[in-house]
Structures are given as structure tokens and as C-alpha cells.
Length: 481
Image (cartoon, rainbow, N blue to C red):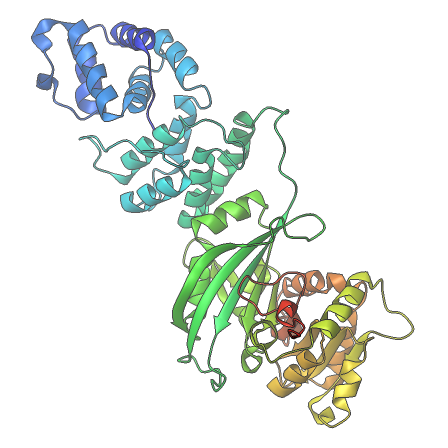
């Protein structure tokens, strides 16, 4: 949106322009070379005052008064009248601060269309960006126009200032040295535009990104297998309770294939809504990928995540805590173990360490048999550990027995003794902190035969279900009469 000025403010604007550009040559420099307009479009023969009045009238009618003031200050930065006017009309950011930003992106690979899109997504609701003027022929000039406009927005009651959000998103897009420089600029400017201390401060929170992957039961986990993906995002308070019972939908049901799922997930993580939420949550987010039993052992934590430049890639499970959740338990009405699942989850939340009677059950593929259901279904068994390359049937049996947590291995060339020793270290401490310990393990420096890169953690929280999930509410008593 542009400035809305009354008659007195327009007069002050005209007076400041007249003082800053007292000659035709000076005014021509502003109009022609800063704004890209032809001087002969104004009544030059009628005098400077009328030309300035015509310039202001046009800027007001076309919505670029902010640009006019910013460009006037760029052209004559030492003029006291323009500086005073800027402090009154645009108090949050100075033109000098915006010029610092412009220098940071001088050599960045910007695209005007991309900048326009990011600015629209960063702007407050109903915000109208000013049109490009005739002189705008480079992406850096587009950048200057957009930051001029966004800098004139008021401080927001929730979330960062629109200009800061724009810079944050741009940093994620460009990556590399430019991103680091922009991120360095952000904190200091964020302090300068913070709301007064009387404003309500946002509560600390984390994020949960839930990725639902619908597939056929017959699919064997091939790259060409078709999937339908839907994504929701929860904001969680300091007690890990959802701030809202209904999460925000980030991605509507979208067709893809298993082979292209990593690429789609990266696109989701770069969505402005997600980057904004990550900015607010200080990048604290857990990713949950919901898959059928046959696909739960997919190496989702090893999928590549591009942070900026193409070569700046890390494993998804290195950047964020990542767990899998079983599709059948959440989405198929035939599953009726809700009571046992919830009972075990409540115990898991209260678990303080390894008691005398361990809540962990160690199983191997050779243990498949008639008594396995009783072993896993015992109410004290809160976590199933499979220290061998896991079969989907064993995962399914664990889920059917109500286990909220399953820890398993994806490698075949590791002895069970070595895997068991490693898993025991991960299990030291409270079970509720297991996802955090697994994430820290995945961030260890790479070494030969690193098990951290080949473990899957199933972590299924019945307190937080996607909006379209089956739940115990469908188990109503039959109607009598």
C-alpha cells in the first residue's frame, strides 16, 4: 500500500522536494534517471513548483509516493528536509538501511518474477505493491522497489515485519554467501522494528510437519509407485501440546511417485508459509512421514535437502528430527487398538528411565510366531526394538500390538550384537526424549558403517491426529430401540 497524505502533508512533501532539487538539472536527475520518466511529460515551462505538484499528483494517483520519497532521498541523502519528512512518514526503516540491503544482493542471482512473488507472500493482507517504473530494467532495481514498499508497512501484532519476512524468505532462496549476509542483517533490524514491550510476546513453540502418503496396499516400494501426498503443519507449545486443535494445511492432496516424493517434500519446506513458521519457531521442527507398513523402512531421513545453492545439501534427518508414522493405524477403520495404543502412550510420556521391568521389547525376524502378539501386546511394552534389518510384517505386528515407538535398523551387514549395543545407548534416559536423541545421533560426523544413517524411528502420538484420520470417536455404541 502507498502513503495516504492529507493536504498539509502533501505541501510538506512538495516543499521538501523543492528544497532538495532547486534547479531544473537537479529535478531532471531525479525524474529521468531515478524514476525513469520523461521530463517533457510535465509542464516544465510553467515552473519548478508546478512540475513538482504534477509529479506528486501522478505519484499519488498511481500509488508510488513511497518510491518517490525513497528515490529522492537516494538522490540527495544529505537534505535535511527530506530526512525529516522520511522520519515522519516512514519511521521504521531509513533509506540508508535499505541501501545496505541493496548492496548485499548486488551480485546475487535474482529474478524479478521470483522477487515479486516473495514480496506478495510477505506483504500484509490486502497490500498492493507499486507498479514498476520505466527505469526498472534489472532485478536489483525490482528489489529496491519492493523493499521500499514493504518497508512502509506498520509493525505487525503477530510475526515479523513484512520486510523482514521478505528478506528471510529471500535468504532461503538465494543461499550461499548472500543468504548469510542477509541473515546477519536481519537480527539487528528486527530489534529496531520490534513492537513495544507492552505488546504480548509470542509463546515459545516448535513445529510438527505431518506428511500423509497414500499408496496402494500392493505397492512394493518402487520409485514409480504412485502416491497422493497431503501436508499439515502444527504449532506446539512448550509442553508439546498443539496451539490449535486443527493444523494448517500446507499442501492439498497432490499426486506424485515414491521416487519424486523427496523433491516434493523439499518444495513444501520452501513454501513461504513454512519458512515463515520456521522463522518464528527458530527452525525447531519435527517432520513426520506417514507411510504404509511396507514403506515404513524407507530411508526418509537420508533424503537430500537443499538449503541454498545446489551443492549445499544435507540429509533431511540431519537438519530436522524425522520420524515415521503408520498409515494403517491412522487411516483404516478396521484397526481397533486405540485403547491399548493410548494406554501405552500415556505410560511412555511418564517414563523416567529404565525401571527394573524394562518397557522395551527386543525382537528379531526369527521371533515371528504365535506368542509374539502376547509379547508385544503386554501393557508394559512401550517401545519395540528390532536390531536387525526389519521386515514389514514385524513392523506391522508391533503397530498392531499398540506400540507407540519402534526403533529398527535398515542395514544387513551389521551384527545383531553391535546393533544391540548401539541401540542400548540411544535408549538411555526418558523414552519421550528418544526422537531428540536419534536426531543428535544422526548429526554425528560421518564414519564407516555409521548406524546413525541407517535407523528408522516410528513415533506415533495419539494425542495429535491429522484432521482426516480415523479415531476412537467412530467406535460409538450401537443405537438401541
